[in-house]
Image 1 (cartoon, helix red, strand yellow):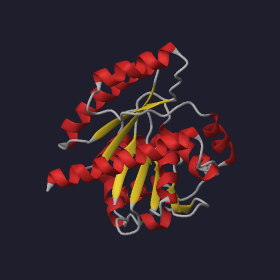
Image 2: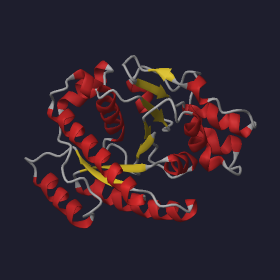
Image 3: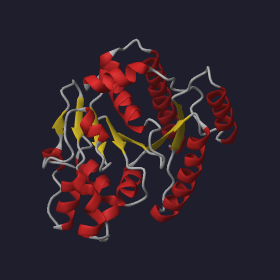
Length: 264
């Protein structure tokens, strides 16, 4: 099982769209996929019709059970998405109060990793959506992750957000005592605008070797798919945005395989 985490400390860069689209592509390929919503805003959960304000089995229960020294039992918290090979571990707004209610007990930063270890035989891939703020939720996601995906909108303010994300990543790498393999993913690219083309040029220049060579284009079908509550690949497989995410999956899978061979 591989765990991919989408994260950026700037909102609105395409994190949730990236998680849903990659999950949809992998599910269409016959892979068993679990999506995990670590963001208290619950955009990923809402996408599949689950309200974060409702009291339902969620990520929060993992931390509560850990705090009470109870079995995590993550299988009991997983929801059906309504789509083949796609399951969801949803968020809840109660996650906002997590640190205040439970404090930072020893081991709290690795709760998600322990939970995913219990599901290792049930899924081929886990895709995690994260909040834009540094805290125990982001720490959990990175500690559990095999690969960090950093979607970055191709505009200058988003690039400033990427700089903050890289600083945070360096701090967390030192804190966790482990390196994190990451890939920068240019999103919302509009070739008609100078801002997009120049931002993409700078991204490739500054993050050479850590950036996906292609980009995710602006595609109104993402909005239509979200409104319908259907992953973009299942909504319109031939759209240009879905074709880009399909290419990204091939890149990430190949890169993972090469990394594994180098480790051996």
